[in-house]
Length: 313
Image 1 (tube, rainbow, N blue to C red):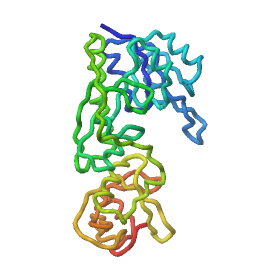
Image 2 (cartoon, one colour):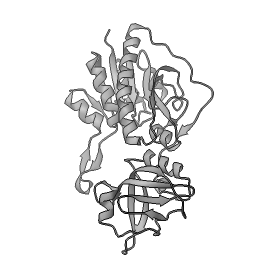
Image 3 (spheres, helix red, strand yellow):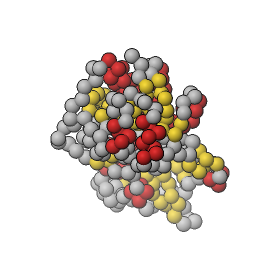
Image 4 (spheres, one colour):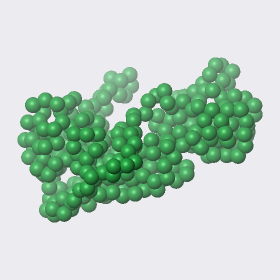
């Protein structure tokens, strides 16, 4: 049986779920997404979210309220007469009248194995913490922060060098399939929920700009996890002086390497750039200078006047 669905999402991560729902034969009666933001040259053009652009292409009505916490928006939402709302990285809190409007409630696709990594940045935080496994879960939304009961889950391994970007894409595709299966079960009346585990709760707070800078006093494994957890965005970074003052260098890929030295000391250059940490070392394998495209470190070193013993900041 097909369902009347309100879809609520904003970034690239949400788009495969939207297209999967439509491909399964459900009727998406409305898309809710964040309002267009200034972009383009000098910020003079408004840039629509990936969900907004996709919905328009598919002929789905799009709504971009700044808040859902008023009677007018609640009435408009209820007027869609949806069976269910599907929420994937939407970006706005859903108040009680919105949560209760669809006949079968609101389902959320969350990119972690709840209750681990509730909150805004579960993919990045899982990698930064050194987790070796994560996943996606379909949960029934309530008024708490990712606290609702869970219906279905899929686990995904995190490799030793997996970046946040790679894990994002993997979970995005697994999640689209999981939500499609959840809606199929919901339409048959066979989707069941159970409360989240009482133990293992952690919060994935939003990534702040200040924490992107690499702390070379940390252990090598911690720094490696920090680099890959912030790759490709916002990107972990350090500074180095090429003779014209400190320049910021973003690090997109790395490996834990052998050796030791003073934290921040360059130990090897040539085809490799190895930097000492608080304990151990990391090899930086892909970097990006300000205003430039990402390059393999060997290419970066051909245009950089670096030598062993120099310090990065």
